[in-house]
Image (cartoon, rainbow, N blue to C red; front, side, top):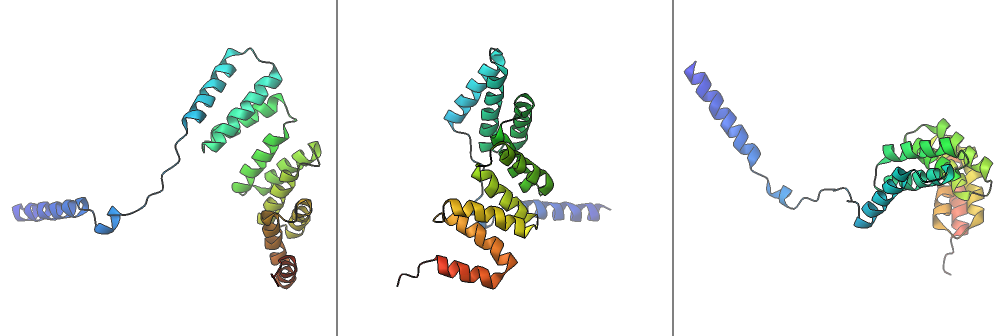
Length: 195
């Protein structure tokens, strides 16, 4: 029994000492680190908190500040807090189309496409000229597999500024899924060859 314990002790010692030495390749490894909030973002957040706590705001002002804090939370990667603020703001002011646009993006990222379509539709019902919602709905439709509808939205978004490469790229991606040869020909005619 003593020999067994001694053998186990030696094995554990070797195992632990092997784990404590770091291989040479790890010394130069690059690790992703989350961005830290800037001092300006922290000050803005603190100021918004103070104003919200004062309760000296109208309901519209309160909803607007909740939206702004939600946008700040979103920029800091605090999506759950952002969604909470957006939901509270919408309960006070259901006509805030920017919030519906944000929620549609969140739903798209979570692959909850039906909710995303509904959010983007709400934006476009409130303001049919809000092109970012059309663009985002086109992306949601693309990921949701509704390619023809995605093409319609992205085509309308593209027509606003045909020189914007993002618009061209997304339209191409959808058209490539529908008809690869036709999309390639369209892209070739749209791109100048420099001759």
